[in-house]
Image 1: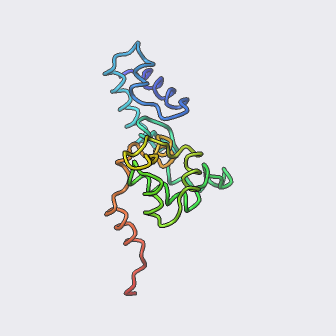
Image 2: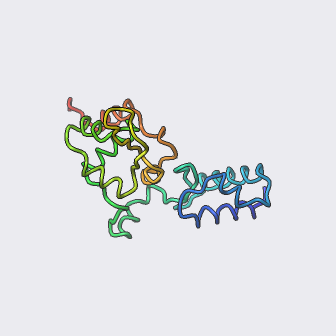
Image 3: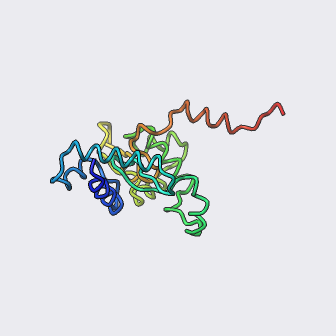
Length: 183
């Protein structure tokens, strides 16, 4: 395949402000055969996956984006003076988890699952555009329904909501982190 086409796609992914979908790449590169574009994307993904570089191409939010490799996080945080994207308060993170795993969900349902009023956390998540209003529930009072956004997927480096760990996976991780009580 043409290295020029791979370089063009690499540039497009690099300059895109959000994950760049394959459909968008094809829409921009109308002068090229769609099969060649797909092959070039796959070659580019393989090249970055096998290359010894500090950056990689990830699938996230339905598209492709460049990111740094996780093993270099310590030095990146030092450079950025430990300023992360925008820190989520533990209550907001808990509310976000409830929404992610139960969406679409109402405020009353979120508060019931958490056992506390979640309105302030929900307001914060809406402002950060990690959740959105997705309609109204067909129930008395027609309460608003909330769900996660593409920005949520990007924030957590997920390609699809289905990539969230299952309850079994979470329990396995938590069990592995418990100190050995027999020692």
